[in-house]
Image 1 (cartoon, one colour):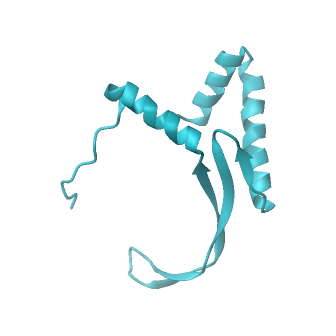
Image 2: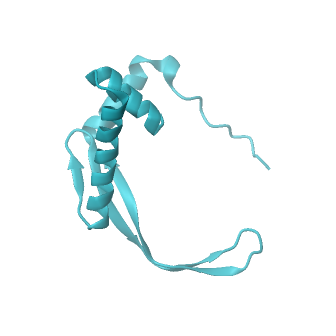
Length: 110
């Protein structure tokens, strides 16, 4: 699902204009980003929680040249789904087995 699909879905379900739905979706996303930047944790009961994790600086490799590259420390967003969300996703797959993704191939790609 893309952001445009989400806006369409909100518009249809809430019987709002596309523009109003876009404002709602954008406002929610902006609020989440603003809170994460401030170091706050966002908890949406029954859905999950968003927070940031600190990733230490490290030495990486340039995949093209193999040269060593300093990768600086940074904050990254992290999402932890709630038990309710996990259960809803799991039970939906059990009720609709034809909609489950095909298992990943075990054939080497290269």
